[in-house]
Image (cartoon, rainbow, N blue to C red):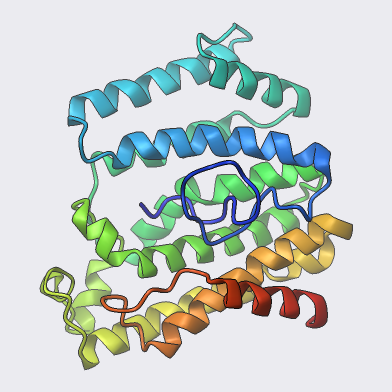
Length: 281
């Protein structure tokens, strides 16, 4: 439930709610279709991993088939399905590193095997597969791929992924997963029963405050990306970053009580995001 955190808020033709806009009307038209193709690949694999009505072996088989399709593309062979034909054409046409798509699949496959994380290093490593490849794919589509840009992008994407972990605690738990560092839960006196019983207390508040402060630090450290990118590409990334800050603000306002409060971006939030995009540096 938490893997994909910055697709489609404006005009992607999809059925899923997403907090963070990509392929919005801000971007040049020629970039929207390629990003939608990337989205369809990632969303399709994510839906398989998250489906609660599919047996585990079937999920593994389907994701293995996705890997086989990527391998065909990597070998310059024709994939078997329209989705991967579109993706293969996109990868070849834009010279996209195919390893970024394999890394995304790694994250979906990991979701079928790992449902708890011992520490933040383990969780951060998951982000390098589940979130950071998306930002890097965007930068390759934009044509800006120097190492500093990629580092900034990784910081933004990791932050957005952490934010989704925090706001989707209930949904992920219902899928049998907890994307929170166990050692940090222990240090704050937080247990799985807090999530199971939807318990909001001082321990949970302090734990969430710590998590949100770290997410903000990551977002701050990557915000330079939108200042460096020119034109509409920079504006798009600025909207994404400001969307992240807005959700952090909402979570802080509720004191991290994700058990009773909806932290999804509303129409009023969107107005605030666009205002800050227009008037804040």
